[in-house]
Image (cartoon, rainbow, N blue to C red; front, side, top):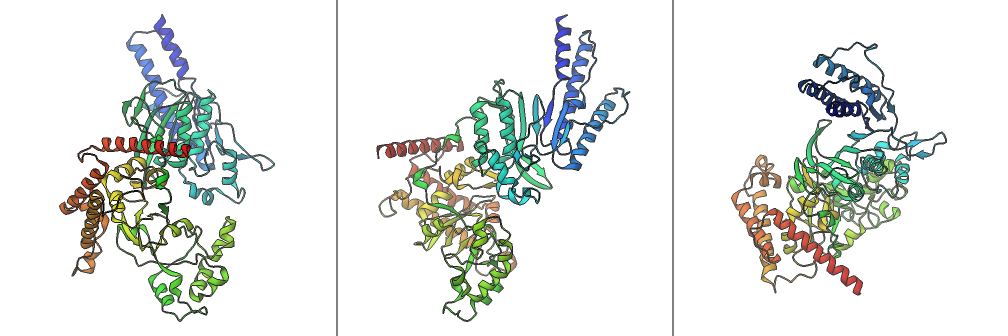
Length: 583
């Protein structure tokens, strides 16, 4: 009968499917895949019995259908055992007799090796082939771009990361996280029709920046049919946010995002209007910068700083205050000021720096030994200087007495003032403007909504990215072309509201007569956790002023705000492109 043939063919297909996890660890994903396939097999056999379909089932789903690759030897060994025990446990749960010997069997189809790069006998790197499979699943390693050299370059292969980037040049950008190499390789297998479907995890930063380029390639040549864009995940006891992405060759016409059907899933794992197409606006260039990346133990305590600052003048006749400066980190903004200091020899030769005796001696002892081990030739040579001195930032704020800063990682998107003689940490974004109007727009709900939509998260906190957020954000007027407070009431209204918000926050943070114990609890994060009515009113006033500057009603929903900002971004980008062509 046709039903017998159809069901028999389906079971034959199910028991022939090959599933690959190219970063299988101890086999958890393979174990889950096996159990689900066994459940389907059991469902089919029970359905046949219930429907009176005569069916001879000679095969059952087997661990031999599972394939894996794992670099860690003991995890690789354990994976085989996990899968076989899971198989036996499932059979026991469903009263299916096990009469084979031996009961446990080593899976030779789980490889011990590197899935994305290997070296031949002559030490040359090459891209390994993955085992033949119908489906790829897995949870590839979460390792950020900046940590890759430290974690992956080993004595046997000290240039592993450089070799990896060379091998995948043109396919994976140099600044991408490690997980992207699995996505790219799986996508290539989809393109070559060697795999039907892929389902992989990544941190939710896969949707942003250099990482997103691998999903751009997926969308351009294939199809994301299923995704969870931002879900909590527990990794080594720490809460992180992950994305889950399923893609194929375009065969699946149904698309499910975060559990809901949608028309199409974009590369940033959203549906509806595509914010992937938001363009960097030249008008925003040279205004937002990352703080100093020191690349060494240049930070000093307040006690050490005071000793240096009260020391006699140096042989050059100058005080150590020239190079001993206050520093600002994210916790100083979000919690309480930490009275931190830093030694900054930017712009000085080694001989000039040595004339500042105590600071130079400190850096000589604390920084130089580690910098001499650095792979970066310039950092090794210029060991007394910050790893990245940020000359563009220094130039942009050189004529200002204050500028705007925000912490890259924060529960709330908060903007504050920083004196320009303070050294900002590399986890701060610095805006080269000193006017209240500009701070007001940044602190408004309009910019906050844009930052949450265009940004990603770190663990469970939003992350600010100047490339994807600030560079694409359309201000009410292009920066440096806006009216002044004196000649435009809309600008003045924003500036007034921003000044009042800052005044009220500062008054709450540092009220007179408060005890030291209670003062410790007065932080911006705690203030926004409480969100008293006066704070909500101050933000409401600011938001209404910013809406008026855009010429928009103040009762727009978040979706409407984002849609209008995206349209304005496209309009500005098109106008600037036309202007550049005409020029």
